[in-house]
Structure formats: C-alpha cells, structure tokens
Amino acid sequence: MQNRDKEEIRQAVRERYGKVARSGDPTTLAGPETSCCGKSSTSMEKVSASSCCGKSDPSTGNASAGSCCDRPEFTAQQLSTLMGYSKEDISSVPEGANMGLGCGNPVALASLKPGETVVDLGSGGGFDCFLAAKQVGETGRVIGVDMTPDMVSKARANAKKIGANTVEFRLGEIEHLPLADNSADIIMSNCVINLSPDKQQVYGDAFRALKPGGRLAISDVVATAPLPDEIQQDLALLSACVGGAATIDDTIKMLEKAGFQDIEITPKAESTKLISEWAAGKSKNPEDYVVSADIKAVKPS
Image (cartoon, rainbow, N blue to C red; front, side, top):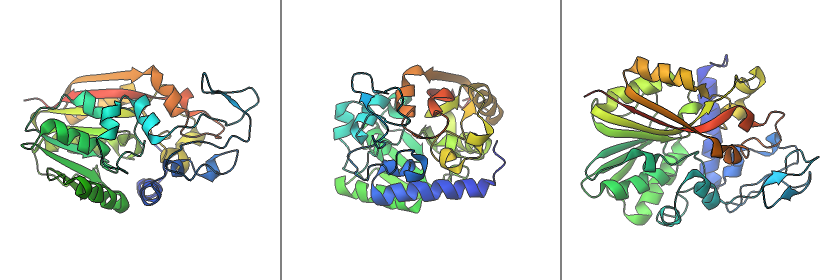
C-alpha cells in the first residue's frame, strides 16, 4: 500500500469528491493540474479533456498521432451507458443523482430481491441507491454510506425530489460502517473501495454488517500490472480511482481473510475506454495498469 498517511489519502478523496458534489461536475476529478492541455470543461453535460493537442478519431475515440491528451467528450449519461446502465435506468433517477462516477453496474450484478436490505458503500449522489430501491420495493430498504458531507447532502436532496422513503443516506467511513451487525442482505459499491487506504478493514466491516448468507456485489478497478511508485504516490491519481487499485490476487486474499466464500472476480476488458478518461494528460495512461472488474462474494450462512 502507499507510503502516504492514510488520513492524508482520505482527506484528498473527501476534498475531491466534495468539490464534485458542489459543482455537479465530474471533470473536477481530473482538474486542470492533471491535463497537459489546460482546463477541462466545467459543464455537467460534458466530461472531456481539452482538445488543444490534436484531434481524435470520432469513429474510434482514439487520439491522433502526436496528440498528448485529446479525448472524446462524454456526458454523464454516456459514461453510464459504457458502464452497463440502460437508458431506462439513467432516466429513472432524479436529476443530479447520476454523475458518471462509477466503473460498472453493481445493481445489475446484485440480483436484488423484493424486501432486501441493501447498503451502498460510497453512495455519492444516490444513483445506484435509487435503482436498487426500485428492485427491493416498498418492503425493502436501501442505505447509502458516504464520508463526504456534501455528497450526503446532495443525495438526501435527490431523495427528497422523488419522495424516496425507503432510501436513506448516512455520513460515515466505509472502513467503519454506521450499521448494526448482521443487518444487510447485500452490500454493493461502485468504484469506491479502491479509494480506501485500508481495504482489508473495508471488507472486514462489510462481513460484520452482512447477514449470514449475505452477498457482496462490487464494481471496482483492479491492477493488472504493478503500479509504478509515481502513480501510487500521486494524490490526484489516488483519488481518481487509479493509484489505490489492488491486484486480483490481493483482493481475493483480503476477501478470504475477512471470511468470505464463493469469491468471483471478473475483469472487464471493455472498460479501458472508460478508464482512459480518468487521468488524461498524465505521463502514464491508467488503462495500462488498471481495469474495471465485477467482484462477488458471499458470507457463509
């Protein structure tokens, strides 16, 4: 794990995503300091790097030769489509809930049933929570946990817009969940656990909070190659879902140590197009080192 202080990493993540919550703009994750081309778009509608370095091929989305960081422009809706959400999913949530911040679709992975209690680690604006609420119905319950006060406020406001009475959002750290023991049927998360400087504690506390037979359904990034030290020590990349990625083998070991069984980790090669957006202009391309993966596990009955 990184040599940086754990609280320093948490604070960097909290500040970065607090800025996203206040602006409604996921391009804040890149920020002008990470782009070789200057400032990124400040519009919620477009997630892009500036195109001053050259033109990209619209048919492939690839930058032309000699272009250091030109990338295709994506809306939050287009990013979510790349992650596996349907148009119906995207249009069914309140405006501002979907900020295009994930790397997969844990709701689809979860196989939710009516009446279940669902917990979302790092719930952001509430996108996955609102989708999960539709599946568990009026007899179910959805709890979103996020350590960023501005995100929790945003999610609560979004819930109020649609009268989502079965959804609640709690301020807390995913390493120390504000949940009772054996209280959740399923814990899901979308590209958040990689941000934690103590992943073993995350999985351990998830195990504690799950009921016997409870399930994990996680979309996250995993490392496919050793991360260079310059990436692991870069706070911008740590808080952009790159620098803190664990390998598949390490993730399996952490899940087993926590007590989980039936562990399945499925890398998604098609995620490289999405991941290439995360650190445009950095000397290292993130897609060379990380890939999105579906992660499933079960707490023994």
